[in-house]
Image (cartoon, rainbow, N blue to C red; front, side, top):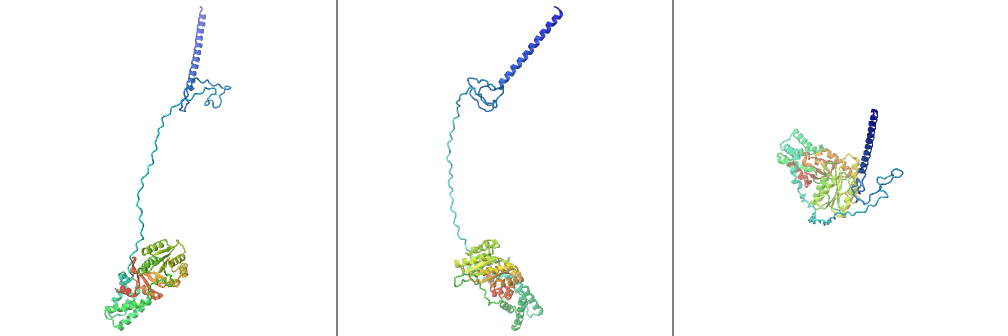
Length: 434
């Protein structure tokens, strides 16, 4: 064999081996792809991926589905082939049901509650008698006594008085708010009587001073509060008026106590509709003495409340109707006209027996100015001086009566419920002189 022939034989063997190797690689690759496809495709074991449900395997394998025109249809991956063998139903044993017997609802034992006690009617206050009340409260006038009584007695009891001494007497009276006219009258009376009677001792000076002061208080004036019902059965009516802050509502409540203590039946009318607390306060005062209270809506018409109060008082047959009016400045014409309207409306049912003006004794001359305006609008019949225990100017009593010709009927000497006393000129002067 030649060398060239040997070379060709070797080349041929190499070529055959190369072809065999290529064919082997191709066959091995196809076999691997086939195995992979079989592993990824779920067999007919009844398992549905992701569903968690396993069906019993079928005895007959499902034939592969044929494709139409070589294209898969819509939903082929989820649909079951029409020519697939129906899988039989398999009975699955359910776990035994647990029977839970319902529990009978727990019925709570009924609570045994004691019946609420019936509230008794509020106990009525024990009211101090009105007779001699001012004498019992005379110690409350200590401030006025130290200014008026002690100063005058010290001057008059010193013996013969010169002009300087009489000047001091005048100053003392003026400081006590008696007013210039009343002061001059008292000084002239004292000078004349001291000479004519020959006053030489402190006891004689005190007796003379008492006599002159009581005379100036005009003890002949009627100081009773007209609270008796009329012959036709209609109650007496009293209006309580005054400026703001003088204590009208409190005075009305205390006056109700005075009348009840004297055996009168009383009904209260809360005509101060501008201050909500006024009606509550008045109702509290009434409840303490067994007196009913008529009240209206807040900011309502005061005249309407006053009218309803008197009408109810007539229906109930009470002795007295006390009407608390709203505080008003004497300089406000509209409010003063409204007060006149209240009085006129009440007079359509019955007469108004009392119009009591409440004055703060500590205001002095301002109180007198207020009194004049109120007297022009509603015809004042009496004065109630409050806070007389807190002032050294007790002489305002003399001045009010002189200027208005209207008696002081009641005085307030404290914050207690029974510290409103009927005014008695003699007892008042005795309290001033000590």
